[in-house]
Image (cartoon, rainbow, N blue to C red; front, side, top):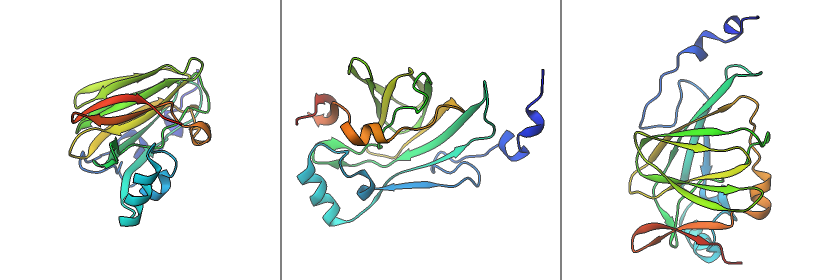
Amino acid sequence: MSSTLHTVAPADLFVRYSPDSARLGDRHLVERRLSDLRGSFADAAAYEAALAQGDPILYQVSAVEPATGDGQLHYGLGILQPGRIGDEYYLTKGHYHSHRPAAEIYIGLKGEGAMLLEDEASGESRLVPLLPHSVVYVPGHTAHRTVNTGSEPLVYLGIYPSNAGHDYSAIAKKNFRHVVVAREDRPTLVARSA
């Protein structure tokens, strides 16, 4: 049995983070602005009107990817700002895993949100709460998107196999079949209209 401990950098064995940011230690911070999410929101007119007012950062993510190979894990810390485009809550791009069987867990740290899950084969969609002190399990072969349904930043940690990869292109081509909108000021899952 070979050891991977010697191949993992000491800086990857212990990483500090702040629940008020998406920064994991000194890792690269990826920022996604409203303009980066063109086509993600269902209400195109509301999107264009919001974009004409500015191009705010909707979410940020940093990741620790210490080792690859069988049994290794990667993890990322994200922060998604509150807000809406029309009636639709701010969201992430969403993705499948490139290695479709790979599952993932999300741990809610701060704020109120939800995970939009969509089974690749059946198209079945579910809206699962993502709250502080909670864990959401994302099965393999499932598209997933994070949605901030609250009034403060949503902070969460995602843990996934090192071979999972991220497939954003499949979502960019056909998007999710459902959207999360405010109905009577509560998050509600509705079918995306054509």
